[in-house]
Image (tube, rainbow, N blue to C red):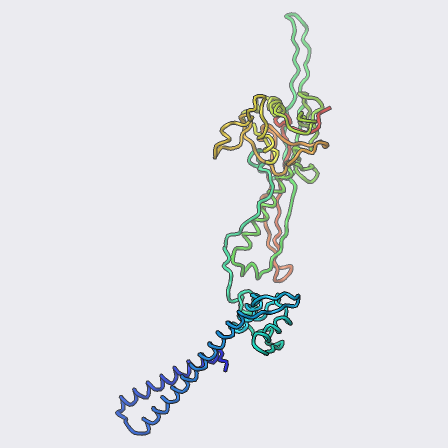
Length: 441
């Protein structure tokens, strides 16, 4: 006779009920002084029933335990031949599946071939055949299956959101920043000199030429984002969804702006440092262009140590005090490998110590993720900068990030319409120098 756990629990409850009733009867006799014969007979009958049920239950449990032990012992000695012809002593996979089925009523694993398992059980038990309902097992509470109880074992979710970092350029740390109240702003560019003439004591003096004043206009450009969220997720999420949306939008706007300061076309974008033309000749100033020194390493495709020294010397002394280098971090690693004629690294030795900011030839280095990370070799490519960016580049803010909520257009859905208006461009074409792949002609 097989006794299930439900039957054992039922027997336990019955035993508990009998003991409770017996105790109440004894208490009633004590309180009322009732010692009549009928009451004593009832008590005797209850005790006999209790004893019989108890003995039956214990006997069944002992018998089933012994049978299982004998079956497991027999299984460990069984030789079983699988469908591929291999013969082994008590196949571990099939024995485990059979044990799980007998003890835990677990469904048969999909890895176990159904027909082979049926034959294994038949051979192990001396003729027992399983039908399909028995093969599938009983319904079991499992953590790994949500409908079967997994929903009741929740995963603890942290309120901290791990965020992915993106390539960007820290231009706002270097450039000049202006806030304006109109659509655009203008900078007066005084980049020419007055003429003068050396004369003798009695020489005739004539008029001399004056310089031409230039105007640089930086217009603000608008970018927008309009993510959508349901009202329910805004209300019920475990973290502040609206604050998260605002932060994500602001960071996206910032990355777009930073990228444009390097590669912006100027048409509906900021003016990028890499997109303006180069001076035709070294040391011959041109308004609206930047000087680009060509790298001279092997085949004109690698950076030589002298390229960096020459580029630094191209910048006038007036701009040297606030000058910075700017490279992509991967090209910066290549520069870190450069050595002089004596095999000494060009880097400041202090770079070897923790907590020291990157420096090259005594000047700080800023990393730009928007610049090229490798030298193409066959393109007109800007791979590095050196200069006073605060003097040379201006960022203009018209309106910061502004977010308008629209919960009305589509009921149950909130649209977050975010805008920002900024502009940027070069305002001094003398204070920033570039390092490139192709030489000037």
